[in-house]
Image (tube, rainbow, N blue to C red):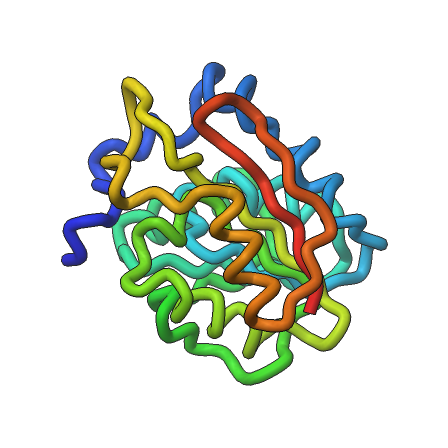
Length: 189
């Protein structure tokens, strides 16, 4: 297992009141400007922090991708409990998304790219699966020292992320801090 990956045994940490206060999924999803019929890919879906709010916003399919089967099993059990359809679970890595080209209208990638080695490989895969004109929402750790989170050398600053995205041909639509530790970037193919 990649030593940068989140430990599935700590899944409860991914969905708690403090995290919801700092990273409100509904407000973050608003940044994508969804119209209600998009097919959406949630890269690093984990327990469904963004997957479940996303499925409420579209009549399309929400693809929940994660590299860790334990995370996907947890997400699947939540889907069954809540009797939610239109979520398709996919086991795979951000570096090699098992999906055809230009498959989705929107991508959510929350706290994942700092785990991808190299991060630009994950961005190339997002670019590949995103339809022309499609949008992506990326939430990441700012390159600052904080009490929790990954080591600073695993983090990607918001300015560096913008530079990389623009260098790849994406159009950065917004970049904003949510706390001193987290930022979001919305970009378009």
